[in-house]
Image (cartoon, rainbow, N blue to C red):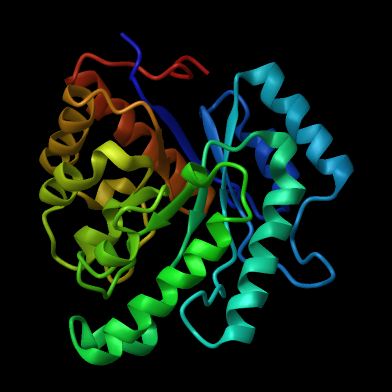
Amino acid sequence: MSAPFRIGTTSYIIPADILPNVEFLAGKVDDVELVLFEVDEDGGNLPDEQTVARLNQIATLNDLSYTVHLPLDLRLGEDELSRQQSIHKTLQVIGRTRALRPFAYVLHLDGRSVRGQFGLPAWQAWRDRTRVGLEKLIDQVETPQLLAVENLDGYPPEFWDEVLEGLPVSRCIDLGHLWYDGHDPLPFLERHIAKTRALHLHGCGQRDHQALSLIAHAELERVIDFLTVNHFSGVLTMEIFGEEDFWASRQVLLDILRVNKLEARWEKA
């Protein structure tokens, strides 16, 4: 039986631009996370129309889907100018990639200025500003459910709960970030899986975003079993960067799937 979720990785596996990476990954995964970390007025690493057309062609030929990771410098909870610039940049990315029909747009709500003040007045003010900024962004996107807010490392897991409460957005649960901070991911999954469109999976050593071989098989089995039992049908992204880590992670995930009597669509590729 095939896994109920789609399995993907990032668009930075081989040392090349997005298109060569997608061409390399086609047939090896179900989804590619287009990593658009750096976007500016000149476009940055946004794909142009010709590249988008080719990405669509590859997707059609290989039953491939895309998720899009929005830029890292979005500041919806800061001053009004930063908020407006962040909304503009987000809409720029969504507009350029809309033709790819992404399964999710992964969004960071950066709260580093109040990261150590969770629950205190400074955090409460940030929470209120961020919620206003997110509401303004929601008003300008066609399908706010595609906005998947990611939990980040170094923050309390509950940091974003009050910001997101009642809003029509989704979650991106980064399991690697939870492991890296020493948290059991299962309680977090239980609370938020119903609103989750994407999951990030990666190993942790001295840093995160490494091969899955750094995570104990038993821990990975717990996660895959949970996703299977709860019929998670979103995207599970091996969020690693590099070919060696990709092949190692892919094999680990295949081994874990077999324990659960599951297989990946691309297993024979």
